[in-house]
Length: 411
Image 1 (cartoon, one colour):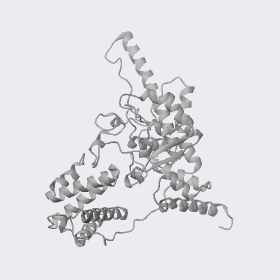
Image 2 (tube, rainbow, N blue to C red):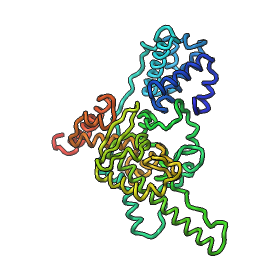
Image 3 (spheres, helix red, strand yellow):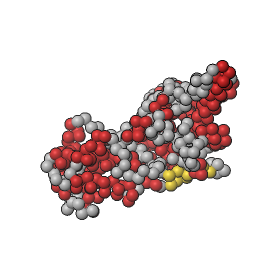
């Protein structure tokens, strides 16, 4: 087991030895056999630790003592503490997965969770931007770049300084506090972050547009005379180059998210070799390590070309490797920073709160409204089930119904 939050880690350590071993083996099974992402492993294992902690408090000495009554009691307790229906459904699914694995592994005599019922999660229609709103969002960095070219004044970040993104100790572009997030499974880069609650929520950390904020050089602050002036000028020029590179990156990120509908983790996990500039296709490694090819259009191609030629070399450093999108320290762009980028530009443009997943919703809806085949959209989005894609047909119908009510004289 790798990093863990202090609360979950303490609960894990307090479990009986046989339960701890079962949790660790289950985590290894999810990561190595089932090929689940680190985020999925973390969610499932956290649920199982909660379940086994509840079972231990009810007198169970090991996994073999679990029964349906314990599982139902655990879910009932979750409900009394205010857990949402979607949360209860996910935790019941975690319990069923663990019970099935424990039965196959010989830890329990029967699959005790096979008949465990769970509330059906309410699935509301996703919020999507109109086509003109999506265009305004993805073109926002370009408008700032054009203003920059028209004025000699140094460029300043659009949002407030987010100094946390520059603190050493976390992944590139990630606030230092995120380094304590609980994670199980292999420590290697995993671009297949699930579309679960963490990504489905509207927007998190609606702060600065880029993590270049607060990066003004302090060159010359300890010198005097002409040396201080020269140092300050050099620092300003360097800061302006970084700010311009960040704007080019933001433009490439936004165009890529909307043009392809990829998940934010998939976009941040792209390498330079994954982009086929000649065919305008990007190779994406999605959930469950499933690979797919997704086309993109001319605006995204122009944004990617300018980023690769004029922006990426400015930010690239020893930690860059083959990563396509970079943070200001040269490492691979972190999904948390990408979410801030989208949210910041949406807020500055006066648009509804928007996340990278909101752009994914919007791209899928606009494709269907433009006449794309449902199966084609499923393939583009990387959905394993057509049912996941069909939600966007409901969105399109609702938008059509709203337009009808507004425009038809006999509506």
